[in-house]
Length: 387
Ligand SMILES: *Cc1c(COP(=O)(O)O)cnc(C)c1O
Image (cartoon, rainbow, N blue to C red; front, side, top):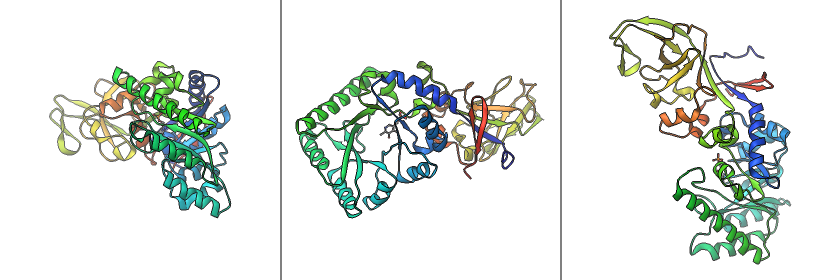
């Protein structure tokens, strides 16, 4: 099996680090809070099945994904933890939601009525979590300003619908990971609005077993917002600015190899568009990674890759399947050597900043052409190619 595919470029997924990060985050959240691990988007590129298995093993309570297809993948792999779908599912799919024993987030009374109707028709009960919009302005019952009372009424009616079991209520923070004062004010305002909503519902005798609002930023920065469950994604994978501060470790290391090297003359142009020209004799290396593998083309002429001898700058345009680096001063770097794109020596955060984006986007972009190599206790336990 190990020889079934090339290892031209690969992503090492260190499952021990999932366990390590989980333990630290669990401690941040306090003893009473449950732990939901967000494993949407193939667990931020790390592999949903393997990450979910690890979370199940270490004692996580819940998982969350974006859509029903992601649930199916996990259930078919034998994952039995409760799973929350954060996005929308068409009500016609209610029988499947029930069959897969999944919790659907609900953002309006009209959707809830449809789910209720469909659940009744198939003789089942659908578990739901009420999504409350306190300031993300995306999904959820809006409770800001004048909408507060009407939405509280609508949530109370939703919870009384037959064939629905309203297990939880949650909201999503817009700027909990931003360190500035305005963001802190906004986050606290969102939290206050969430707790006010919960209080108003309790007065109507509408109670939930699980209240949750803490994404990565809130889990890390506002332990008082843990409530009954924390719901981190990015920090679980050891990425983002808050991760290092908490002692979390990067789970994914994206690596490639040196395909070939050559010496080129001064005043040679390198790669498409001739955007880089040498001013002196130069030793270059070709790496088998390009934008189709997830290495953003906007990093052309900007980023370096990490070799055993130090950083090697990318020269010229990143191509679809390859890029070219400067090895002039890195004389020990040879064909076949391993090179890190991001990981322990160059953080995905720094690379994302260079690309003008966030680490989430770089991790999700690692394409299905890149085999994931799963490590546990320092050895490879599985190699998986999604092609
Ligand atoms: C993606 C998502 C999360 C996790 O966000 P992170 O910033 O990765 O922690 C939590 N809750 C909801 C509703 C989400 O969509």
